[in-house]
Structure formats: C-alpha cells, structure tokens
Length: 357
Image (cartoon, rainbow, N blue to C red; front, top):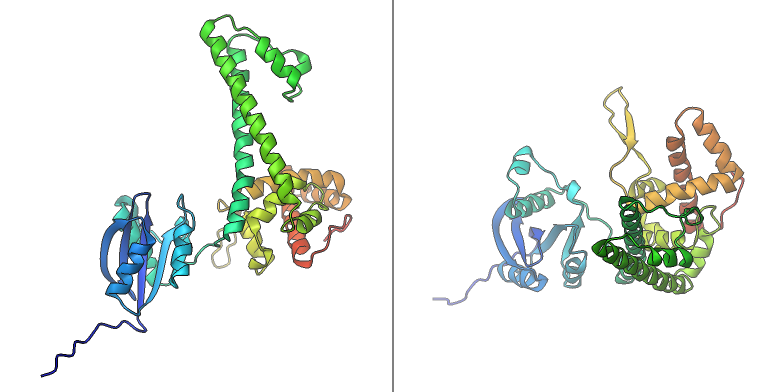
C-alpha cells in the first residue's frame, strides 16, 4: 500500500483577493476565479497575507486589489516585490449596488472589491515611484502650509473686526509685511484674554511664515536638481507657469509618457466636461467631478495670466467668450495650455507665443 501523499497544487489557477484596508487590521475576501471561497480579518501586514495565500493555494496566480486612501502604496509595493500582482483602485470605480450602499461594512467592502476584481471590472491607478512620491510630498506640504497660513491670517482679521479694530489703510493691500506684524503686536483689544488670543495667533502666523520660507528654499534646491532642472525650464517658457507651478506639474504627473494620449492627461487633470449621451441624444454637462484638484486649480489660474501675455491665447479667449461665459472660456484656455504642456514634455521643446493651435 502506497504512503505517498498528494499535495494540493493550484498551478494555472487564478486566486483573486479583495482587501479593505484599515490602520490596525485588514478585511480580506478570497475568490477562486469568480467563486467566493472565504473571508477573514488579519493584522495590517502584507507578509501575513502572502504567507496565508501561498500556504493554502500553492503555485496559484494571485491578484489583489484595495482602494486608494490614507494607506498609500506601501502595501502594493511589498506585494509587487514578492511577485504578486496588486492593484490600487479608485474607490469610485468599484461597482456598487443599492443593497450594498444600505448595508455597507468592512466585510462587505472587501467582498465587493474581490468580486469586481474577479469579474475583470477593475483597473488600477498609477503607482508613483518612491522618489516621485517623496518629492511630491514636499511640494504638497508647501501648499498645506500656505493654506494654514491663510487661515491664521483670516482668524486674526476676524478677531480684530469683532473688537472693532480697523486696519490702517497703509496695511490693507493684502501683504503681511514686517511693519504690519509690528502694528499687530502693538494692538491692544482691551481685554486680557482677547489680547492673549491675538498674541498666540500672531505667533502662529510667524511660525507658518518661517516654515513657508524654509520649504521654499528646499523646493528651489529640488528645482535645480538634474531630475527637474531641464524639464522645469521648458515648462517655465509657458506664460503663467512659474517655478512652483512647474515643479508641481512635474512631481504630480511623473513621466508624461504614461498618458498615451492628451485625452488621458486631460481626464486625469479634470479639464473635460461630463457627458450624458444616448442614441441620437447628446448632452454635455459641467466639468467632471473626477479631477486632480490642485492641478486643475493651478492651470485655471495660469490661464488668466496666459491671456495677458500671449496674444494668441487672448484671441482664443475672446473668440470663446462670444458663445459662452468668461468662466467657461478660461477653462478652454486652461485646456489649451495643458495640451501645450503635454507637447512640450513629450517633444522637449519650449513654448512659442502667438500660435493659435
């Protein structure tokens, strides 16, 4: 009688795994092709899941997916380094039913992701390199500090207004100069705790101003690096594109060749309209809600500068205004600018003014 023990072998079989990611734990649902197998909860550790999959489904082809969010891409990178295909997906792209919306929980979320993955309905988002993500974090932090600084300034103005303090006309041009800060420090609101509040608010403004100065120095050094210097100089030939905007574009887009067409880039930035068409009916709506908020905002601001500096852009803007509002026309100009930027980065050629198309 033979004592040979047959081992399970999943060679050629597809195992699909949906993961609902949280800080301390993951909810995992496993499918064999499109057949549901099991669900479980585990520690937030890719190594544990890799060990589990290879133990229970040896030699299988594994495909994993989880939704983009707070956890970033670190888990995806570990899975990829282990030879396991892992998608990070836009949460809005995971199919949802009315029942699923009304019975939402972590277990159902992981099963929904796994089922969509098994059905071939998911497409992963772009995963940046660690260097790009590192550079991007500093650029984004600069914008966060600027927002925090503006909030602090607004709070101070609100506090002064509440206590009937009028800012002298020489300081009303918007710039918070050293002279204006000295005036603020000398201002008395007449009440002990209100004066303490103002003093601490001023300290907060000075702190964020110092942070902004330091980060700006770091970004200038980054801009001079071999990674960005050449491409940034090309982008800065575009009217309305300064050093910070150029660095933001480069750190957010990465290698522009990943966009096979301009339409893909335009969809990523979000300068395209929504569309509701069926049969012979065509309806074009407002700008798509799917967009890169920072890039779309920066390009819209840059478009206002471009129509002042480039006669061709001004002519195009005036032509658009004949059949639409100024706000919609400036979006068209921003789209034209994005098209030029795409061409510049692909062809490595500077911007030329006075060209209509």
